[in-house]
Image 1: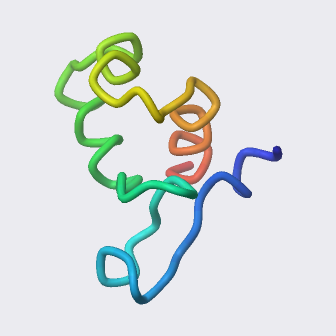
Image 2 (image 1 turned 180 degrees about the vertical axis):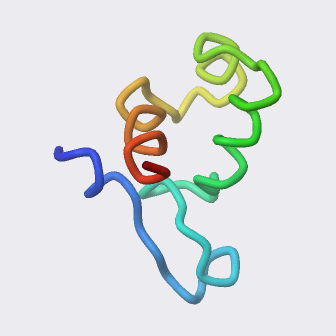
Length: 63
């Protein structure tokens, strides 16, 4: 799946914030976690439904 297809915006989910498709994990939240020093591995361990490709999609979306 292309990176940006992993991200969806739906007004019914988190007030329309971009989220990882199939989750309620906001792109903004994941980027904040990375910015505060949480590692990719820590995020993956904390959120089992999350994949490395999802994290890369967040970074791509932010750029």
